[in-house]
Length: 244
Image (cartoon, rainbow, N blue to C red; front, side, top):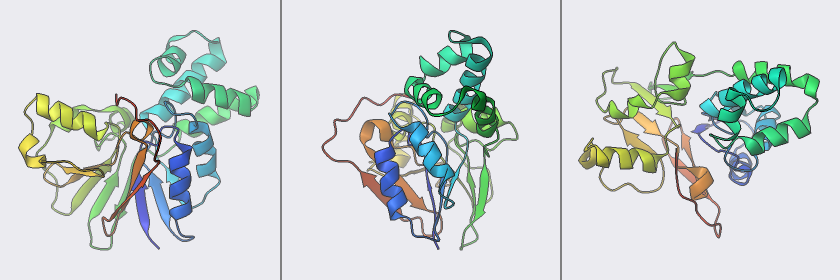
């Protein structure tokens, strides 16, 4: 049995299916949020995860955006703040369309509750005694909003936790983290030349898995015991411009 993590699939069912086919029967995969929005098939990924006992979905900000947007739409109709923020500002239109075409209107409240009840952090002690926290934003907090939204943590480059602790996250695409660090002269020399895959940072106590799958056509899956990286990619698809 192996235990893996990935993050920020953002509607890329083609990449998700490659991961799903890679998993052995007794493996476990934690998806650290953001299967919804931007790409075409977030709802398809979400329903596939629910049907696969090997896979656990943690909350990302896009799942909570969906819950808030659906609640506003269900109660007030199209055109209200949370719904507009989700579909217009965060690439949620395709997810919204797929949801409302796939389930009954009366089932929307149950879905909202389901999304709001997704776990927003998970701890895993690996075979070497390393205590790993999986959390979407990279911030460990008792406040759900911090765990799914906080981006300030990418400027906290010095580790103040225990030597055997590690945080694995997504949320901010690695190219944008590197761009921010370069512009602000933050730990740029420490990172050096980045190659495709996970980004180890904060004195090697944080790992970002968000490779911008919807734009780069690739996803990285990290083994939480060996830290081996498995990169899945789709060739011959035009890459897009990465944004947050």
